[in-house]
Image 1 (cartoon, helix red, strand yellow):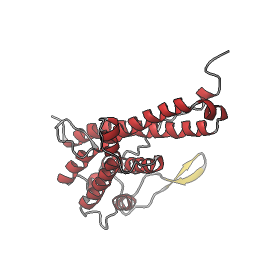
Image 2 (cartoon, one colour):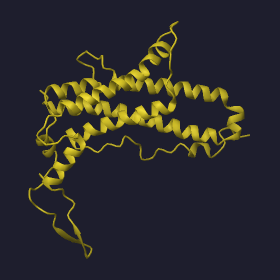
Image 3 (cartoon, rainbow, N blue to C red):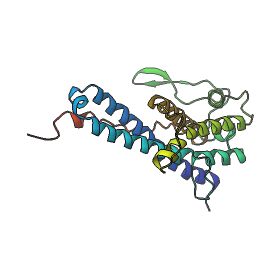
Image 4 (cartoon, rainbow, N blue to C red):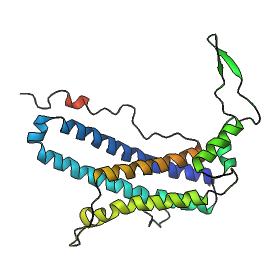
Length: 236
């Protein structure tokens, strides 16, 4: 039987996969928009293609955000971020002791980093001290003491996740997933959605760091969409 950490590792891995897709979708859209805006030829001839790209971007982005954030997921197989945070809050899983134990070896107490010599140059060791790890934990969680509960932090993040979900759910339900006669009072702008995406990714990064000490970037190292546009697609 899987232990709790293994279960959470599998869970967050699925969430991270969606976060990578989300960040990649946003970055590709932003880069494509820049290319389009700087192309006189595209501005004259690309309206239909631009509308198609925009529709696909919006649909893809909204569905990924919904998969990550939907607070209504109740099935045992649901692995969204809202359910994940509710569970670790119920079990009071995030503690300084667990965060400390993600370091191997454990950071020493009351100890300054020693100087070591590398290629004839003296530099300080890179390992963190206990006090530095404690400071990092308090800075990440925004709590006053390392022994305090993280419930308030998780509750605030759950509220933020719901706000992010609510930003796109009406558009999803009334324009994308269903056809309805109901009018949508306010459609979020691309800038507003980009801000929400950044907030969501930062929340996911935080829990990767607190629970697993993983510094996730959710970025492809080789993401470069400019190259494909440097030569004509259709040869005369």
